[in-house]
Image (cartoon, rainbow, N blue to C red; front, side, top):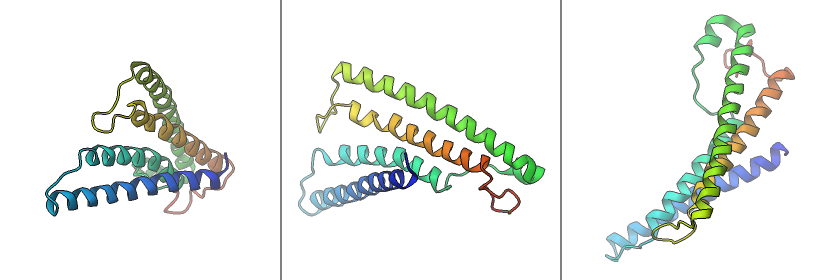
Length: 163
């Protein structure tokens, strides 16, 4: 998958989910406090949009190098060790993301088999849980792209803001 395609998908999904969530919450506030009538489904849909935004946004943040990290080992031992510490951290991240992706798809498969539906919207619950394997799978891809960029020498570990 190309970076540009993933950028567009991740950015669009996260933005649409966050924008939709903000709009739904604004409508709910208006309904509740101005019209004195609450919507039954708005809080649930906003929650599910937030969940999708977070998981897909994790992948986007990985690509943009915006995740928080502890850099003490890189700073103490210098650029030579920094490269290997960063690679080790990324390999662990990929392992974690792959495990969560596999287990997430197993959970989605289980939920699809049970037919469980959400309380207010009555959509299949697996659509909500699908955000976990999708987001973590994308994050594994993005982290693998970062590993490749380090191995190709595209990351400068001598600069103070290296990653």
